[in-house]
Length: 104
Picture (cartoon, rainbow, N blue to C red):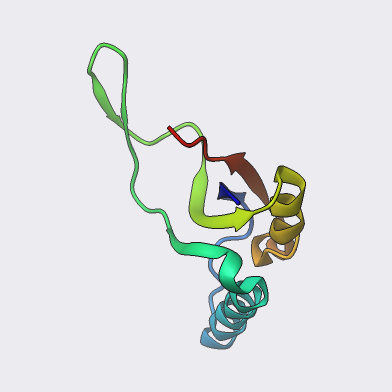
């Protein structure tokens, strides 16, 4: 099995009403449950960003717009993509990037 990093970008953000938040959280919980043992780390949303430039200068903000991450195990990159296709962020207009984590 190979580990893959799922990076979440874009989308509508967090809904405003508690009912919508509860429905979104239930969708995420159901998706993670559907992947079972493939989930290595459900991850978290991301928050404030600081970027360090090659010369060492630090600035606020980033360039990638990553909203969160998860780690999954899969037999192939295509299998990891298949898992990611059920991600709730897609229903909100966001994207999922599926990166292979290279063992070193």
